[in-house]
Amino acid sequence: MSVVNHLDTKVMIGLEVHTYLHTKSKLFCSCGTDIIESIPNSHCCPICLGHPGSKPVLNAKAVELAIKVGLALNCKINKDFFFSRKTYFYPDMSSNYQITQYEVPVAEKGFIMLGEKKIRITRAHLEMDPAALVHPQGLGKSNYSLIDYNRCGFALLEIVTEPDMVSPSEAREFLNTLENILSYLKVLMPNTTMKTDCNISINGGARVEIKNVSGFAAAEKALSFELLRQKQYERMNKKIEQQTRLFNAVTGQTMESRKKETADDYGYIFDPDLVKISLDEEQINKIKESMPELPLQKKQRFVNEYGISDYESSVLCNDLKLSELFEMLAKKQADIKITANLLTRDLLSILNHDSLKLVEIQLDVNKIFDLINLVKLGKVSDMNVKKSLINYISGNKISPIEFLTKNNLLVNENMDIDLIIKRIVENNLSAIKDYKNGNEKVLNFLAGLIMRETKGSARIDVVLEKLKQKIN
Ligand SMILES: [Zn+2]
Image (tube, rainbow, N blue to C red; front, side, top):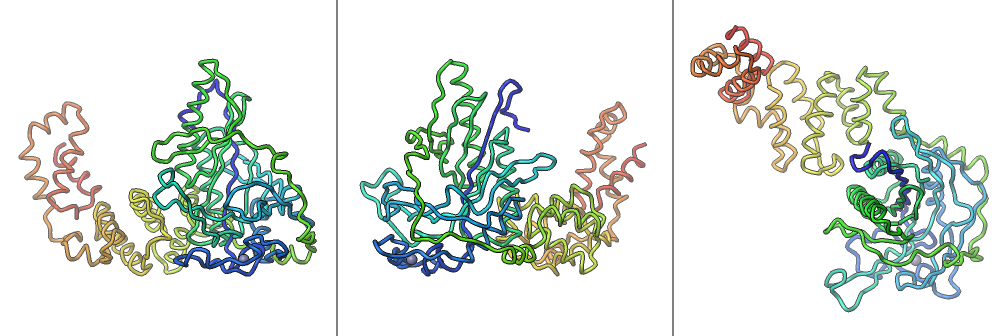
């Protein structure tokens, strides 16, 4: 659990996650959503601009995707729902109201499992995205802003949780798990990020909302800062006010933005331009039948089908691409144990180190397969497996085998390891005395020297075994 959370503080965290659904056109009009590199305000029409008299028409694909998400999150799907107008004045919404769902969302009362713990989902509702405000010299530096309505009217699905999370790190784990489920469903609009409103209160006090946090690490940081701030207020007997705050990713701090509006301020009213939606059983069944395998199901299947551990299976299935890569290799009859090890340990640590995601890089499954076979034949040491992968992933795209061959890093059967060990031992007699006096660390030190001599091409287990025999 969290390192910030003390036993005496009861922390309640709830999240509102905004995700873009992958639809070809906007939520209520036929304007296209392929806006990357397009001229600002080139993908708009009277409907998404909210001209008087224009009539919105609901995008059926968006409803289908929202229901898919609802089912994957174990929600009850509402067969009858409608849309409301959330009134507010701001230039990003030229109609002065956002069309959203308030009274009856498309899905509600679900949950996500984080290991053994259940995080309840309050609701998932559809709404239109506002326009983007562009600050030509950067936020807070320009004395004017530009507005691009290309994004206005994109289909958003807002997923709201109950305040069931007890630490910032748990909130981050929730976001990762949710994103993984959505990636399995293939419902996310490419090149978009999930934005989160983070709600946090301590010891039953006032709830503070940190608006619009972009990215999961940022959400964790924002919540951690806010948790510390609230604890400090409590210690100083200062009142924690219910308020909306903003997170500054550069300073890592949150600051007050405005007093929070309540539902009454928004004056929700039923949108008379949109008819009430009534889904029939058959439509929902059809969507149910089209549901793909989800992370938890896949995790169980991998354990049963390939005999890997629960841990390895969870690591693999926490990333759709990684699980797909594993299965491709397994189908090619790669050694399962080595494959699981290589992907969950070596590959993942390289990706994490460079903050990369597998989906962002091109891997040739055949080249990984060849590397796994080399490992199986004992032709390459762990250290050099990793080196060759780093080299393959980080840019120059030389296949692992080519890299190992070129740099002479394959295990050399003719290399006389015994001779190298003998030399190292003779040159380090005082260290060996230390070892005999009980300093176990010396063994690793000497093994390191030997590995260096062999350019890492020897197997560390063999080296350690022979070294022990030699010394004792
Ligand atoms: Zn439009």
